[in-house]
Image 1: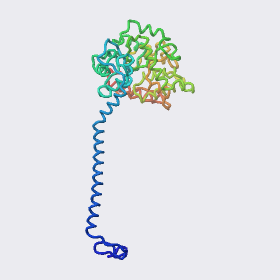
Image 2: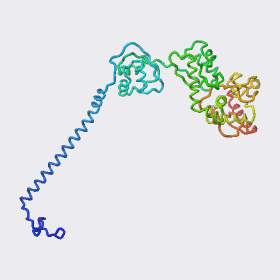
Image 3: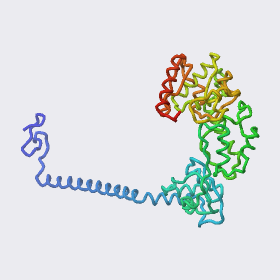
Image 4: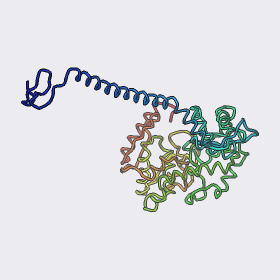
Length: 396
């Protein structure tokens, strides 16, 4: 046979024509043994390397936690030992993070360092269940003891809380606050606080009245809360909503000024409870004002004549002599008729587009409201409401 045209003998050696001496069988066997030996040493090296790597992986897997603990120990956060002494109250604010809770505890010298408490809390999933509130703790506690005490229901003092629903008038909100068991206010303290509007943090366009600016919501009351401090909490929430809506900038650009927006929003909230109708009702109000039409809103009559829970007003109440009576007097009432929410303020600042001049409820169960651009169309909608009331006696 040949390799590239060169003769090769039966054993695979090149032909002696190349001038090479054929190797003996003994020589070939020796060479094979040497190759096998070299290969064996290479395989052994690979096996040893894999074993070493495997051992390292196992060591890391089993010992990482211990290594981390040792590293943490090298940089240990200052911590007290033992259960602590004495008594101290700690306020945990709403939406506090573990870091925030730890810092509150350090500030009251419950724990020696916030970092120590954070490290302990990280190891206990129950730490995520710590709620806002007031806790009775001890001073100079170990971080571990502090966490255990915070997780003990007996350590938490029940949060004092008062809720002011949306749509309440100043008079109604004041009554809720004054009679609140959580607030525990001295008799007459709310009326006394309202009589000093300059202390309540009202915006400049409130004209010295809290009506419209006691923002509805649920309020956690701090220790030693007073009527004035609670009312200030409510006006602060209104201010936050006004800033979010950028009411002042809109006024400066020639849009709806804040004072108008609050009054319109309060009427919208009293006239409908469907959020999708808020901007449309606001548009009706502005359209009537622009057309020099009296607003003729039942809600403003109810405000001064007393709410009777009915849909319709009486001829007597519509003749009530008050600037809030929009059947009798043109324009907006002199002030808001309740405290509107952010969504209502948004609708008053950005009313829907449309030429409606009238609206009326047509279904009290669903809150469906029908809008009309002409009196004839409006009368047909009123007939629908009357038919509904006839079918649901005692509801209207």
